[in-house]
Length: 433
Image (cartoon, rainbow, N blue to C red; front, top):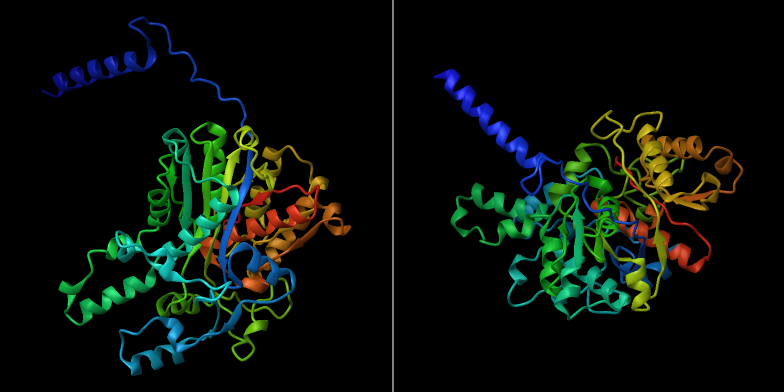
């Protein structure tokens, strides 16, 4: 019996082998797959929602003025309206960090109006992180002048928008129903509201985009990964246009409590919130949790030229790495950051001394900032120590946006290039928080 099974398995393997190694009934090997010539990727649209305000113009103006979107945390910010007042007060009292970078909401210019991003068909399935992505994507697409109506154009336009932790607030509310034995009242929209890929899904449904639909979930590297992955989809010919970025809405009781328990958040500056996020400063003691979204429209160069699109910058290099060291702490020699930057530089075709500016991931943690600074110094050597290379972290103004951080900071880098001509843009994917 066993011998017969072995014989049948061998015959099946032989047939499969011939299927993969022959073509057209002959015994000749398949020819190599079609070669796709290198396609260059450019940025043609920008959109964002940040603690500095809603929209690129509002955020950028406040950033270069040196303003900050960080403020004191309130009980209302914890989104615990379904809990008893005593529980809310107790939870707030137990939080060691009471500062946050919160998107200003309202109906005034520069404020985020969530009601604009609900519709009668999908409104109940749209959590806050999804509405941030919809808002930023809409601004980016309008900026790029790319809202196609032709079916062919929609099929060649994709979406790559990721997130770090999704809607933890919805999970907290649902768990309360279990505790109170009211699980029958759980919303049928609970799962669609918490799935991170639904941000990309809702953007694609709103505009009818039928190209690649992708959602990276790589913690603080999510935004950069989403952009880099989208660029490679364009380079490989999967799409001509990609709507790419990251989104996060993490200002809630459970998310903040979790990061407090990790001892990752700033705790020394509860009485002076605007001083709490201080990357590379000797008095830093942790990051400030933030929220928002950043979305870029990436486009194949010739496609952009053909339709005379405004080109902000070219995305030339993208590097990824993992230091295989610890779940949160980077290796002390900065090997992860060095590998990521080195690979981005290699792909870009640029030399170290051709880079003018590095937007650092630095979150204001004691170890992380030190290791990243050493990694930049190690890779760029004299170019860094001579003062020719500028580098900074913009988290002092917006806090740490987790899954949206890489995308928002990529937009800051693009805008720096846009306002200072002849700058080169390298996305450095940071694999650690």
